[in-house]
Amino acid sequence: MVDVTSLFEITWTVIAVFIGLVVYFTWSIVRPKYAGLNIPPFPAPKRFLTGHLHLWIPKHELDVVRDMRAATGDIFSLDFFGKLMVVVNGHENVKEMFIKHWSEAPNRPVFVHQHILDEVNCGVLNATGENWKAQRTATISILRDFGMGKNRLAEKIVEEVGVFVNKLKSFDSKPVDFKLLINVSRANVICAMIIGKRFDHDDPKFSKLVKQVHTAFSKVILVAFARFLPFDVFGIKIWVDSMFDFRNEFALPYIEASKKNSLGNEPPDCYIPAYRQKMEQETQKGLTKYLNEKNLSASILQLFLGGTETTSTTIYWTVLYLLHHPEIQQKAFKEIEAHVGLDRLPTLAEKPQLCYLEAVIRESQRMAAVSAMIPRIATKSFELKGYTIPKDTTILVNTVTSLQDAQTWGDPENFRPERFLSADGNLLSPEEFIPFGMGKRTCLAENLGKMELFLFLSAMIQHFRLEPEDAEELPPLKGQIQMVHVPKPYKIKFVPRLQQ
Ligand code: HEM
Image (cartoon, rainbow, N blue to C red; front, side):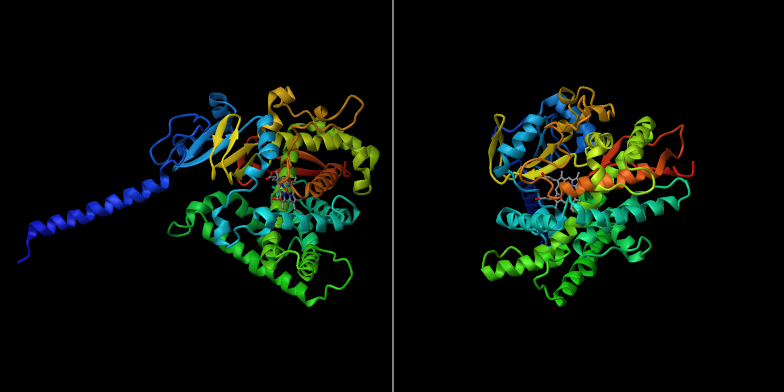
């Protein structure tokens, strides 16, 4: 006969051992590894397991960081499930992170989607060490050959701007949200650069691709958690699939197609053959193992992502500021009218004369802080302003504090383009103005980004009065942090100036 008492005891022993193991493994994962080190202070006590998660979730992230800085100081720590994150504020500290401590924290953290795509240490944005150097050198040299910041690429952009302006005209002054439209136009500029062709705005496959990439940007953080949940609660699995689609239906086919064309001695006219040419040259010289198809495919997606969303979000912000400041819009228009006229699109040749417009763009970049928080991961322990930053710490460098601290800007909350102009009307570039980052890992396409902002915005202001949907209730200037800092979606009327 079975001894009921011992069966009962065995069952409870097994359950107790199981619970003990679960607790042990959970604790070994979430146990703070920084105990006893002189890390920067916490802004508030942390909770068991979740640490400071409760402080982060309910509010606007930039407000949370601002309040924590006020309470704790420029450099503070946060704990998320035992993992340490350090937030660095204030321009001197930002500079120290990007310049002095460059070698201790040169890389961005690895996001889960890189594992899903099998793209850890792949492509110029995510690569590390020698691989990153090879990808960055190759990409900058290719962009330079295409005339980034010069006429060759500029002509393609002006062509795209023309299509964009006609699309805006077709809305007939009705209120529209133009975010997808500007994304498609911007994506076309990147396509011209990567594959040497543009797509029609009405091409359903291309619009879907751009929409997917845009959604990817807004959901990338959620991906980390939600892909493990049953069902597709946040639409994440669709997103993950769409990233695979991008690679399988866009990047890889164009790489394959490019292989059918002999590289010859002619200078290539777009990124894929240019990269392949460099690959071959380097292989022949036995120089590097880093230029390969895996890195090329990853870089294509990253240039598409990095190149589309940052620029179009900056344009979206600038238009929003101009809605709030019609007098500034009018002044920029008058400058364009005087130097370009109204019967042709502005070109790069006029950029040096349109200083006020340039100051408007800079002021928008300053206030919008599109790349608000730049992440890094410490590859070794180091000291920052007397604090220990342990190896593997995630560091958030808060560039908003460079762009908006009152000590530098006086009245940072006011939209005042004049702050970027000297008394004799020349453009100013204060050291703290770092919308493209700072140091060795700064934006590699800064010139292209600036060129696009100028060409798109000058054409929009030249052709249209930008008017709110409801003059009594302007869209809010408060943004939200996704992969970049974005305004809430809004609608606007593009009223053609030439009809007046
Ligand atoms: C207004 C437009 C743009 C802004 C504000 C912007 C901003 C930035 C910032 C802040 C960084 C990160 C710097 C860091 O981590 O320290 C970055 C990196 C990068 N950007 Fe841009 N960017 C813009 C346009 C573009 C365009 C048009 C492209 C591509 C065609 C591009 C491609 C990249 C790439 C590939 C990196 C990674 C560089 C590396 O890791 O070495 N960006 N950008």
